[in-house]
Image 1 (cartoon, rainbow, N blue to C red):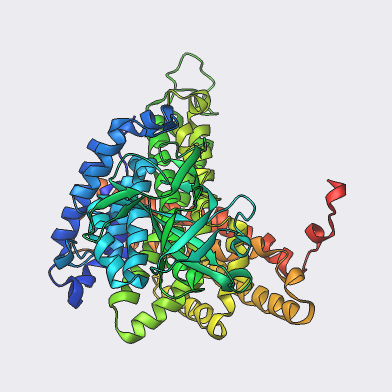
Image 2 (image 1 turned 45 degrees about the vertical axis):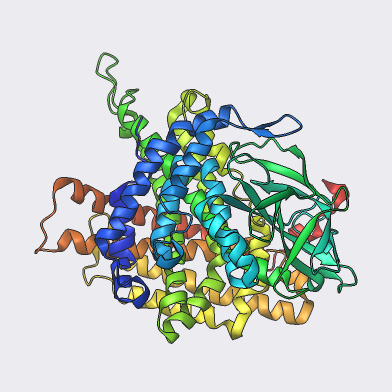
Amino acid sequence: MTDILIDPKELEFQLYDVLQAEALCNRERFVDHSRETFSAALSTAQQIAQDKLANHNALSDQEEPTFDGERVNMRPEVKAGFDAIAKAGFIAGREDFENGGMQLPETLMSACMAIFTAANPSTTGYPFLTTAAARVIKSFGSETLQRQYLPAMLSGRFTGTMALTEPQAGSSLADIKTKATPTENGTYRIKGHKVFISGGDHELSENIVHLVLAKIEGAPAGVKGISLFLVPKIRLNSDGELDTRNDVALSGLFHKLGYRGTTSTALNFGEKDQCDGYLIGEPHQGLKYMFQMMNEARLGVGFGAAAIAYRGYQQSLSYAKDRPQGRHPSNANPASTPIAIIEHADVKRMLLAQKAYSEGALSLCLYGARLMDDINTGSVIESQQAQLLMDLLTPIMKAWPSEYGPKSNDLAIQVLGGAGYTREYPVEQGWRDNRLNPIHEGTNGIQSLDLLGRKVWQKNSQGLMLLHQRIHETLSQLPEDHSAMGIQWSLCQRVLKQALSYIADATKIVGETMHSHGPDIALANSHAYLSLFGHTVVAWLWLKQAIEANKRLNAEDTPLNEEAQHFYRGKILAANYFFQWELPTVARDFHILSTQDNTTQMMQAEWY
């Protein structure tokens, strides 16, 4: 079966044709880079992924970490993979040159991490969490905390986690009970219990740095009383060297459906009332700080879902090309040679759906990474506009890939038939791994509430208006020809404008309901809004891909070889599939929103 993780042609098209990533080299921060250095980073990531990650993806799934009461045991290949990522500089890839980083754009770093995830989601989780935790410390931690912890984290000596969830609270962080008591020396005593903490204990690094949400005694109720603390597994002495073990104890490991190589832990802080924590930033501002890591993690979850879906698509595509079975309906001769199953119309449908979901999700997340580059390094106007779009689209970037990524992996199983659900073939692991992503970093139901309850209204809906403007700019770029090979531009324009109209009308209706009847009624069908919104945005990004592919096919000054022609035509057909098969489904979502269907609200617990 194929060893393709993410096809380099796919990344080159998305990065350089659709997102114009090479133009980032004109910005001061990236002036030392070029397309060649970007491609070198991608090539290095591909090599590490093939040699050090893909080799144990199935093994770490079959032999998941164990806890013997004293230490966590896992396959040695996991550490080798983690070390390879760290030594190649990818944990610190975004950081300044003088701090040991590669000063790469977010767009390129995200593409590299997607390659790692396609090869091995579990092992990639450790460097991903470490990078995100380090960036929170860099943004909000004191100079002392930055000096003591950042170099070790960015080099891979220390790893990082986010410790939010508690048994009684789940996603409702307002209800956390972990306490922080100030001491005379300026530290805090942390006491509480956290669960489902990814990477919470292991032997991959010398130390583990937990970012812990807790409430200082006397703090305001709810989320306004949450503070953020750095809690190391091992304390550091005054010289910044490893000292004594902190009062952080692993009480057990959870055994998950997927991502089995990433430890999922239950941690006890302060069992002996000796757990030292260090306040990050100001008291009671912890959730605001943590949202930086949470939003970064949400984009990372979207990337993970896209990468796993893409890998499953490639595996089922390879199988479909090689597996002979059956004949065309018009062929009634049982003695004739069976055809490869990729010739069957329904298999083509399933492969097209996978292509549409996985490459659409990848395009969505890479667009998010490009927005981050504009936020961080663009002009004032570029930065402001990118921030508006990023704030609006973060729930979509997490939820859409994590909903349709598992659907893609499910179809990969179906393409393989009976072989698909056996452990002898890799596609069932892909589905299991990806099935965690709709829950990671806030369920998709929470994302829908965030989108409809907050994000569309922020700054008087400027983000929504800007998104409409950007989509109409793309529609203005449609070729004058009414159709190209496999796609009708006029149909795309009509259907996408209709979807935009649905969003505008649904937003108005929900806004009026919220004003007159309150949020409970207005947000009852928020998932329908998320679906309508997400499909419309992904359709837009597929249209951008189709336009770029059409340009390449019709560029007279750059003749294409046969492989390139196949690639671009495949893009156009996949876009057409999305507009013909997927985007029309938003009519149902709009119907539910416009009629304010109250079926779910009417249902009573006793009636199930």
